Amino acid sequence: MPRPRHPVRTGISGLFAAVFTWAFYERYWRHRDCFNDLGRCYDPETQTVITESAAFWGVFAMVFAVVFLLQLMRRGDRA
Image (cartoon, rainbow, N blue to C red; front, side, top):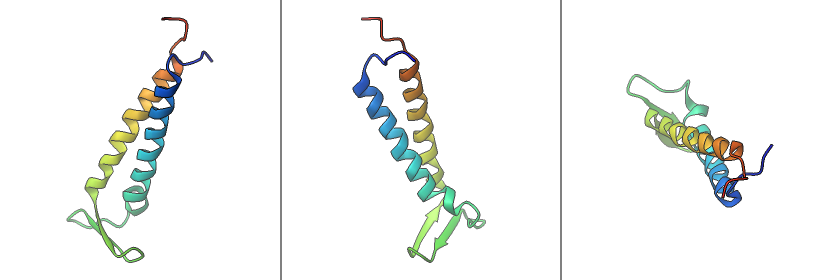
């Protein structure tokens, strides 16, 4: 696999992808079976109400994952 052109940018986008994936999992995916007709879920463990809008974290995770993968696939021979 070729080296990425900008390893720092690649690392940052990979880090953001991981953080947003974690946020998506914690704020939406774990509770996806709990949502009622209004799109809300009460978590008795943390005593919080979670809404279906938390699924938006998945959009950020996907964007940064695609950017990360594109940067990994770029050839490092261009200036």
